[in-house]
Every structure is written in structure tokens, then in C-alpha cells.
Length: 109
Image 1 (cartoon, rainbow, N blue to C red):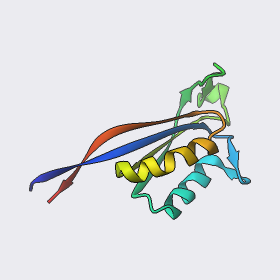
Image 2 (cartoon, rainbow, N blue to C red):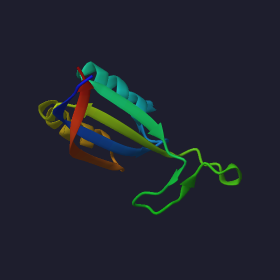
Image 3 (cartoon, rainbow, N blue to C red):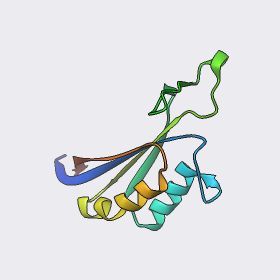
């Protein structure tokens, strides 16, 4: 089986679990919005510990249970498609981190 590499772009978005947009959790709103935009793929991860610009530590440790854990979205599509949505995604993320990285996607042939 051969692997074929294609150039693509990865958009990563870091937000807090409590962040909201249009009366929904921001990460959930983004997943549905990205699907409507025809984005190839998105995965949401829930962090177990982290902090952002405010330097407030959020942790999933039992004794320090936080309800505002880090949420990471990984969004993959063509460079053109990611470039067309990154400005709009950035507007939806009031505090957090939004960045892109060029990647290669390997598909089995």
C-alpha cells in the first residue's frame, strides 16, 4: 500500500471550556459552523491542565476540579479553505489562541 502526501493546513484553536458564542459553548458552535463551511475535518480535545494569558491554572485534578478546562480544536483542510475562514474564526475567539501550520496529509492509495 502506497502513501500519497498532499499539502494542507492545520488551524489550531485554544479556548476555555466556559467560553460561549451565540448562547452555545464556543467549541461546539465552532464545530457546527466549520461543518457548514464545508471544512474537511475537525477534532476537539479537552485538556487536563493548562493556563493562558491570564496565568490562571485550570486543572482536572480531583481536589481542584475546574469547570473551565482548556479546549483545543484541530481543523484540517486545504491552505485556501483554511485561509478563507481563519479571520472569521479569530473574531469568534475573544480570548484564546488561534494559529495555523502547514502540514502534509498522507492518504493510503
